[in-house]
Length: 478
Image 1: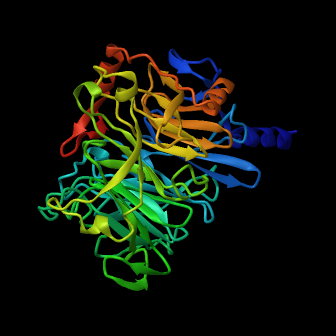
Image 2: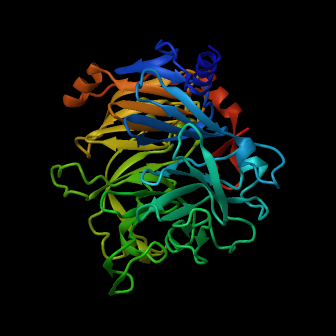
């Protein structure tokens, strides 16, 4: 009898914690979207990623709280598995504050590791202070019910960190420059770290992706690796792609040489026209190869990118831009200068301000997005999560939207028929495109949202403050 009671008690202690929430849609403006569930525990969420464990699907969520793992085998009933909190992530020198920020969390699904980039603004640091620590945490996630910190590796950069070459190396970039870095830098470039031994990472001394902004070394914000293995670095001045392995033709050095993560070979890319993206700060990008050629465009020719920018009234706020890489394969972006600039040809654009009118919120910037076939799911801060049909890249349209009044949509992700939204105000929302949205996409029928109420916009501004160097484009929590 005692043994039975003990067994039941143990099972109760180790059983996943249910976080089921009634699928009652929140107050706000919703069109052609089914609301599935909300997980309020990861409030101030900034990024999500997924791993498979046998027959179990696991979602990892990062934010101010650190790292959480959820069993999402049943997307309508996610179960909290573990939480690696600030008590683990704080360093001996940290005295207050919380973990920040790891916007684009990457992971190694083969070796079951999660990487958390530490921004220098974590734990009340600043971008300019050389004593504000940045780097990357390597998390052992072999058991998603028991996450463990393997090591913290200090780096000169630490806003985002991305796997390259089968997750044997990390590319870590951003944010704005430290006071002890070269005075002519506008931001931090990419540092490359060998993580083949996760307990003893080693970082190459010389950064890469320098001279990215018309010859000036500037903010390398984020990296996305396409299905061809090309690493696309987005940031101030545009988006540039690199080969990181194999023998390649280097159009800048005018010779064939070996590409490596620490000495990559330029492939293509560049800045976009200021008339289309006024700030030229490209936050993140994708170059889909799975989509078939569309009209006059070849497979892999189109680059999809976000401009993050905040202007009064939203008139010139962040734009979703589609550009052609044609004409950029001979190193043009690496030779671009202020007096002889190179720019990609913009094919199509979409923005809240352009389509739905200017808002008093000043919070209409685009942020993270993902592409699946001809559908883009897109986070637009207080303007919510938007679903765009890009079957005609010259005419992207909106076919659905989810804009809860208390939402701060940070990043949106497709996963097995559902969309998971990292929301800084709500935690994680689980959504699904409604049949009406599918019809709108099939018929290329646009739907538009009403203007964002001014009082909601004001609430957003009160929750954040601008970065000392990049203003609202690098907002941080108050």
